[in-house]
Length: 240
Image (cartoon, rainbow, N blue to C red):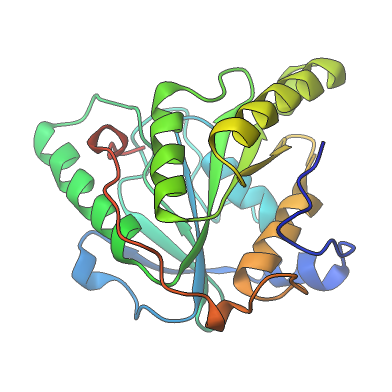
């Protein structure tokens, strides 16, 4: 069952599709001091390595090569900013859970990602990607727990839903949502497939809400309080 408690449902429109199709690369950073000014709003994309993060970004923006797609874990090693419009960005974070990188790189990214997730007040929500065949891994749950403690909104894309039958995919979604209701409210989840474009409209709707394009039932973006501080688990800070 969908979670409609946090936003007002509006029909998917050509305007929304055009908005994200116009997204362009803005900047890549390797140091906290290189981040753009901490104003406006941004949505970050996070997930285990090979969960389909780059493919999801490309499909959501209807661009084949906005984010690099690789079968080799560890390719995303920068925080990549993509501009939707002035002061609104999508942010591609390095994937977590892949340990085959030098310790020096892992330690650097641990520090940078902790600081970004803890201090970035422009961050309005986290799109969390999970392979539908392997949802809610221990590392996923660690990140969800931290986000819940911090008060950061999370929406889960259960990627590669085309790998399962419709019935099996719905069963997984219901199981995930049951866990979320119990342990990580008000986190929401949906089915998603970059191959079939399943769930693109629903994901656009969530992005619109967080970036201030949609009609919201909650307080406007500018009136929301800054996020609380917290400490993300070190195990998550591993390059994609």
